[in-house]
Image 1 (spheres, rainbow, N blue to C red):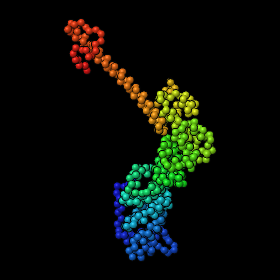
Image 2 (image 1 turned 90 degrees about the horizontal axis):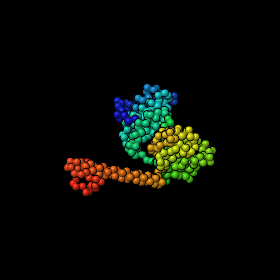
Image 3 (image 1 turned 60 degrees about the vertical axis):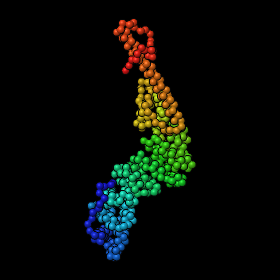
Image 4 (image 1 turned 120 degrees about the horizontal axis):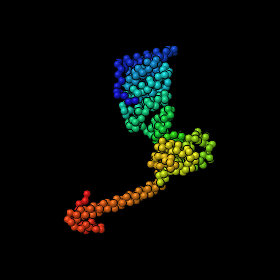
Length: 431
């Protein structure tokens, strides 16, 4: 969206351009009641009331959306140029952004592209710290959502944090911005992007408002998104939020389901599903999707808690409640999901684990890591002891060979038995 230049060049004085623009609006309106924008602004222009003139022009400019396609961008650019002559430019821009967020009737096929072109121009001619950029960006989001063109927005998301800091918007406005992006992403089935910005919106809710209806609605939306997303398996990002914790009281069944997906196994979900099957359907949750994700999470937990790093097929089949012939398919799926790394041994009917992901990392997991580090340290000590003994044996053998060589040279009898290095007749350097 940012362009190389932030200059809009239009020739003519303010009075000349206002007169031209007013006549153009009157031609579009073709008013039958005898009133005209031109006649209304003439006395105001003579009195030097330029802001009042601009108010009349902006109020009447909704008609620009019905202009011929080739005239829309020049007409809006002229209007923006006129507004920039005012010291109060920010009071006019929101209304123009609202017009551009509406469908352009004369150009149904390329209307969104025309609107984005004008909005981009407005965005780029404003100083980087101008708060009106925030409202322009919201209008951009509305246009992109209506046209389902998320790719036009994606490259600009990397600038978002910097823009928010420059605009100095409060938490409520940030939340509106994040929700706008989440809605645009959801419109084109970018579920993971949508969820990420839902999460950011949740983080803007003050602690004292976590039990408010808006916070509850947003928390449930984020939770449902996380549960149904085919690629989201980490639920600790949700459980860490105060607004999600507030669901423990307002929506205990939802919170119980979250705890199961966060840390429990398939058996626990099966018990929950048996008790709450009707509730799951009422909430619009797909039971097949939930079962599949729970099986993958269960396999990840099983892999992480296996000290031998080798899982028999039979153990996997039992934990996942699937036939033995489906085990390899589920292992492949959990590897594709990035939860586990390893390889299948069909000969031994074993899954050899190279890396696994802990779903929850707490006190028990730290103890397990400490235990494995102790085992590893003990193994290293044993290895070092073996290396030390072998090194000593090599040195002793070298010394013996050197003494035998000396005996041959001097004609002395060859030494017998082991001689300690400390009793050697002279120092021998051994590399």
